[in-house]
Image 1 (tube, rainbow, N blue to C red):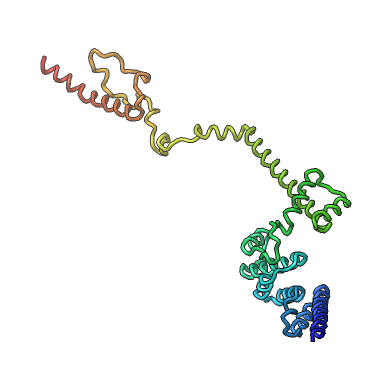
Image 2: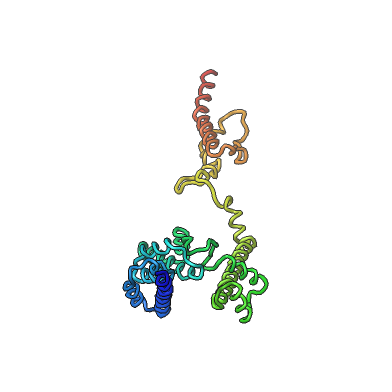
Length: 296
């Protein structure tokens, strides 16, 4: 009896390894429909369905069929090995990107994908907890940044060495350096443009004079004379007094005051007041003469 049990264990283990091997081969070959049919044909055996290769195959099939809820359930319910994390992380992120694009009705840009990653962080079952940025681990990015400060143009041999040190491919390393150089050039060009604009404005005499003379060119409505209204402050005293003012009949007074003697400090009001007083004198002057004659 014991011999039969021990003999069954290797057969059971061997069967699980065969199933896992078939799942891996079908995944690598891209035969997702055949993979789905193979998984459906497996017997209801718990140890088979808990096999990591089988679970990963189920996740791949669920993703390609658009059954994202089943995909999330599989990824969150089992602790996967680190070597399977990159593949499963891609499935998690792509599924959330697709759902977000359906809701918004348009493709996601870099900012939109960043917001999705923040809203739906990777579960710890497929993530080792290390912070990632643009799908690069921070440890890898720090190695690339340190190399970039010394040499922004690594040779092909150096790129291969960096790829081995960071766990990235040579193409990923090349693209990272290319994108970083482009960003730095764009930032330098923007800074030069801002400096040129600021220097041009500070040394432009036309701009400076226009800015400085705004207060001289501008005036309030109170200082402007309405069109069609005579400017009384510019009228001469002779026009205001008229030829028959009667000032010559006043005894003991000198000649009428000249234009320079008329006060204009008060503006229009002072001139009107002076004109009114002169007009008042022209009326009273004949009356005073008649009174003198009657008294004599």
